[in-house]
Image 1 (cartoon, helix red, strand yellow):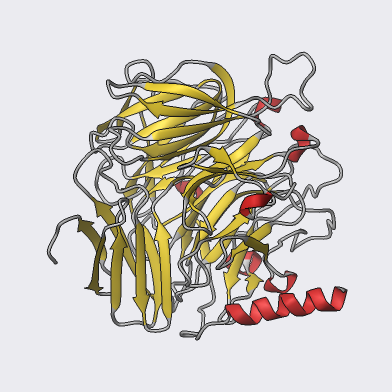
Image 2 (cartoon, rainbow, N blue to C red):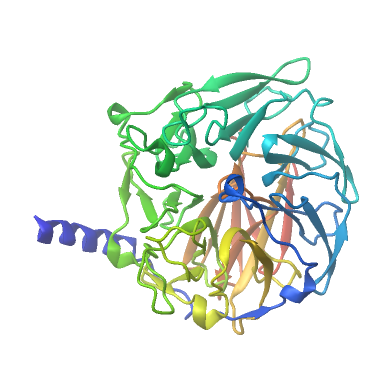
Length: 507
């Protein structure tokens, strides 16, 4: 049986092999952490989890700005001034923050922030020029005192505002807690006259990440990654069909694994238009390969994605993965994977010196650990992170939020990186940023589809143009499937172009 399973795994790996492009450049990052004002994610047990990072362009200068959760320290805004210089911006004074996600809550075309807290969540309305105001009650969001650790959002056709899913961790008011005391989650549906109504999503198993996206069946689905440390038994990873408003089960081909779920990262890495999903955890990181029949299968160990032990040093205990993010850091046309790692606090069975992982995708679709050689194998207790082109040179840079240690900032200085393309979408109506749309880019030996989503990661995410590495391609074809299913394109794009596609543009 074991040999048969191994054969199946090797067959799957072989099936993932696509034609290779140019050889990958040696990935290198330069530590520029001194460009950020000092900031750490701090606090007691309510901030063992969280520590998210939101990335958005809040002043429309094409340079991504950073919003970092602080725990018991204030939420911080770092405005990108170019040339890797960051100045502190002004935000309302907010403590107890666990993370934040950028999205357009009020459909005015300006990005806002949904701020998660151990306490009352807060909506910060964007006013332009990196100015924000507290607007929770003004926007009609429910005001409750919960412990929020996960968030995602989507737009239903015809709605004037997004639907929000809010994931709550342990019920701090349960006298029998914290074990087996996971709180219920909520779906916030927009009301026609403004505001949102809350409906309970139960059972809850202490989610640390949520993502609304198309699943392997091609249907809009809410995925919840749950922390087994608190659900203890009977819980699992969950999938909730958005259209049918129900949890999926074995009859749907879904058998949720049980793991210490921390983060979610979704990306089509096989070129078939179905997104694979990385689930971070204590011990093995689980990559789920999307299958043609709408189900998922665990990636074979030979693919090199488990990242289950520290890859430098002599600590052989299991790793603890938090934020995960796909991004083509060498622009070779194959998405790589960054995983932020770090002990929860002082858990003796898990590695204490736990370096972050950067897994480079090779031409044969296996992954190699390159964090140490690339210069990003820090061993602080990392939590949130982001891959984003902070200086506009087409190479993805890296930001990491650490628990009780300063943030890290790295500039991508990879020599010989391939060509690239970024794509942003805009459409008329309330869903201005086209959440739910899919962008397909095809160029010579690469083909990749990305969906525009809000959510995933661990406690934070980005609202930036989609980045595609193109390898040695000299031309790319871009096709857009808009949220309502309408298709536009393909249209020709030139490598190195920052493309904004307006719906209805005849180009």
